[in-house]
Image (cartoon, rainbow, N blue to C red; front, side, top):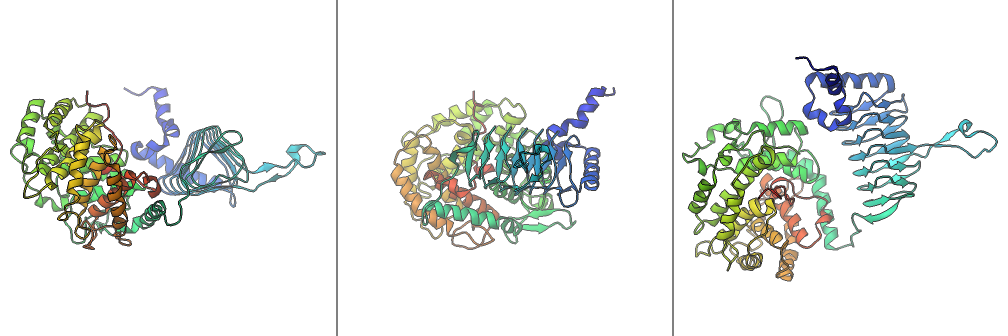
Amino acid sequence: MENPAWNKAYSQQRFDHVPWMFAHEATAQEKAGQLRHQRELRKAAAVEVGADCYLAPSASINGHAGAFFKMGTKGFVAAHAYITDHVHLGDNCSINPFATVRGKVTGGDGIRIGAYACLMGFNHGFADTTRPIYQQPHNSKGIVLGDDIWIGAHVSVLDGVKVGNHTILAAGAVVTKDVPDYAIVGGNPARVIRMRKRANSPGSLEEKLERFGQKVGDELDAVLKGYQLKSKSGAGVTYIDQAGGKKRVRPWCDATEVAAMFGRIAPGYTKAGWITRLREFQDHVTGVVPEHTPADAALNEAPPANPDDTRFYNTMAVSYALESLGSNLAHPVASAANITAPRLRKKLESLPWKDRAWHAGDWVDCYASSVLSDARHFDGHLPLKALFAWIDKKCDPMTGMWGPWSKESRWQHPVNGFYRLTRGTYAQYGLLLPYPEKAIDTILLHVKDHAFFNGKTDDACHVLDVVHPLWLCRKQTAHRRDEIEAWVLKRLPQVMAHWQHNRGFDFVVARHKTSLQGTEMWLSIVYLMADLLGKADALGYRPRGVHRTEVPGRGLVI
């Protein structure tokens, strides 16, 4: 049956009000129509816009040669915005519905202009009292906007104002004076409410963290491109973990998440292209993601006879990477979702807790992460309550671990298993650890073991498997805080010093053979260490995906 007329009209104008959906949901016909609209605006008003932009047909954009609207890539102008004269903005900028931007306005990248905001880069002359104001000439000092600015709804910015980088102009503010970097301003006239970031003292740890974060951000594209291989077909690129590596799935996830730490998209694909590519890795029947990409699919192992033994790590990794892009897996992870509560308890009992606690924790991490995707996006009814009841009871009240000390691995397997288990469960679902103080005691015993922590052969797994558990335990208790901070203060500068120019981090600190996995893990370690000291904001980035610090599963265990 044909859609009603109002439905057609809605379809035609819906992107005007939600232009950020255009790249993902527009049909080929709608995208072609948008390009025609941009070409017409180029002819009529000298408009210049980069790739992946959307200009609402209902917006009024006026200009001419010498005074025209210009926008970089991946931006949008929403419904009924009013733009005239010399308005030049960079990449990833947006002008929301009913905003007005007129006169001379120049800005950098990452500027968000809220609905009904008004930026007026000119003024009326009114000095001559013998003439009506409307007959007096305009004057213009211009408005200058830095990078990474959030301009709230109904904000007014007057002519002559310079707005610094990383600033927030609160809703309704009337900005009449310059705004310093990192300031949050509000009111009429606007004043500084607080600073998002304080100036760091020369030589302080905060300054070192800031410089490190800036250096990594500056080198990020070069680092990521160093792990690319050009596709034989000439379409797109492939990511590998290190030189000569096989075409596995994980490097794609690491590249996505490293870029997302800095609010960017990894080079080689657009955001929509990345989402499409990552989703293609998933098997639509089982929901599982194989180890290798289709190019090296012959290297994949045959699936195990017992479905409960299916390894979910790549499934988990792809799910995290898609999450960092604001998306999710295309299909439920049936191999995990089909495990009933009785089967789950049986599987948990069979895991090698006594002698291989890391492997046991690995299975729990992968399972809990896979069913998180099902619970959030596919309305899955999963035995999460049974999972937490079992692991709560299994935890040793004397050590806080899920496995005992052994002569072979000492505390390595129990501590590393603690990390994997708790990352996928307590950290992701926002539940309290059973015995955090005892866990801290055990972890601090482990870090004194020079077989694993000597500053020369440390690898990212061993260090992350200590830092993340300490970070998680510290959310519940201040137990042995001074000792934890002393250990972190000693190790953090050493870790940052191992960054290699335009190459990233090695998985093993002193080997000087960089990898994408090592880069993602050590960057996350640096953040978690800094956060244990209360100084993570100085870095200017935060982990995304697999090591993100948010709690997406809060409220799902009922």
